[in-house]
Length: 187
Image 1 (cartoon, rainbow, N blue to C red):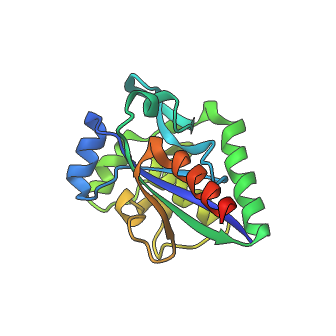
Image 2: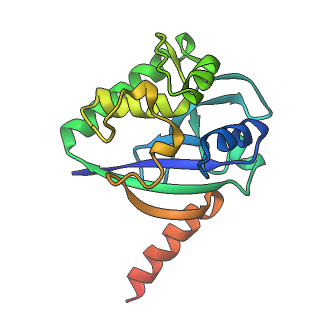
């Protein structure tokens, strides 16, 4: 078995504020990581941390890009245990998008559709929640009872299939993990 990590964040940007207001969920952005240290996290978001105008497939890191600018970003980090074959499928699906990243774009219209609980599936277009849900679905990891294109950020919040690992400031996540490791070593 391997653990994967789903990270929900709220950065306080204008777009995240709008998503939070519409969804009534405390977190507006979803990322997926294959590693406990969350390096990297995969998602669909800003290509340039200073402007939301250009968006697409991104590899995010806790102390870089938008998270370097918005160090007060709140997060919840969830884990999910999957068998090795599903983990490998997930890696392959993410890498397939990564290798073809220039074909992919952020689907702004999907944000409107989602606010009305409408599905919108366009090849090579995602919003963050659709991307993460689709990568899981294509890897035979089924944690939702609806189409990946209908999954919203709030669907990850308190999802009974996920285990909450951490809640707090994203920039403190690795500090917390290091402190836990040290406390286990001194016992």
